[in-house]
Length: 448
Image (cartoon, rainbow, N blue to C red; front, side, top):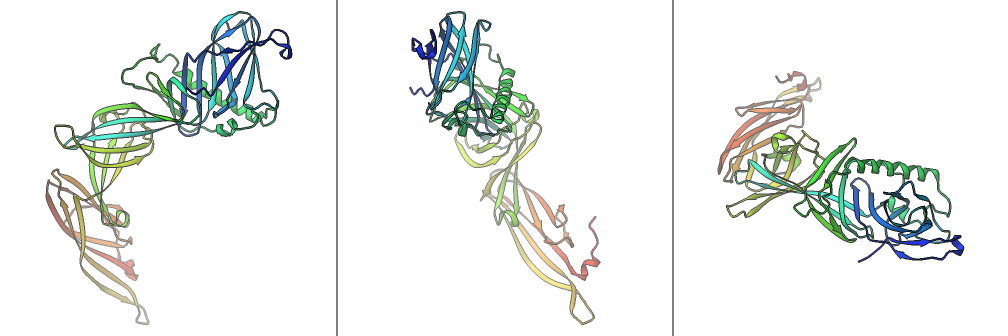
């Protein structure tokens, strides 16, 4: 297995230049936790290891070659005998690349558990969803997944994974820090702005980890289907995936986030020629609240692919897909699943004329009315009833409409007709549109 981060124990007997050096292979990680941000190429790694220390001065040599670890973010803390183990400093030997040295003074010998934390890039996650409509399309099973991808150069075995939704501001890209020839550009030099930013970012990330410390109560090795613990952290939201996963570098892992059945949904078909052309678009809407079997947490943005159950043998038919942004709790979402062929709207202009001319002093036309008579035909070839919204844009705020079909004004130059059609049925209606032009606009009266 690839070991990108190499750590060696060096025992110092007198001075470093005259030292008798014993190289001891560092034991493998006992635990490792990954906190991955989705708004920046940033991951906080927190791992536990057991070092073998000698009494007196010890030196811990490490290398981060072939990884995207930011060496300026490395920290180590003893988890036992903290009053007897002093991690004095971390130095970077001059003219040596990808190498650092921790100096440790210990008044005890033997196994010493420590916690090592650092920032890395190359780890990312994204959310995606699968919705399965029931045959009557009144409810939907909604399954959420996250895919974690590791391109950091380091393998992470049995890692507990935590995902952060929210914005994070960093002064330096972690990948750029990781690729520097020397950690602070020149040996022995640490720009104050970099040190301040690093310390601030590490404190914030560690505070977030501390919020969920002990959430599993020793359940790191659970192998049943994983769940996600979600907690609000001021401007962030934290998703903690149950159990552990091994994520080698160059690999991706798909993890189940949630699985909710019988989520109530509304299906709606929309026609708007100026926006969608001659196609009818299908929309699916629901709300992220308790009434819709959701509402426990915000839903991270992603892509939802929707299917429909077509028989008792759980065969599925593809309906469509839509990308959406972050959905807060108690917020409605309407998803455009794309154009359909089984619901058709056909508007036809069956008559056009002009009248009510007005002339200026030179006998030129100064105003007139235009009358357009439209017939709208709607066909539903589905086995289910459908609801169709037809939006008509008039291109002017000076208009009147005469029709027996109920409509609703959308804005000053647009109205919406809503029709409900039974299975395999059709409907049609007409409307007469009068628009006022030139000085005839002065004769127009606002609509009630």
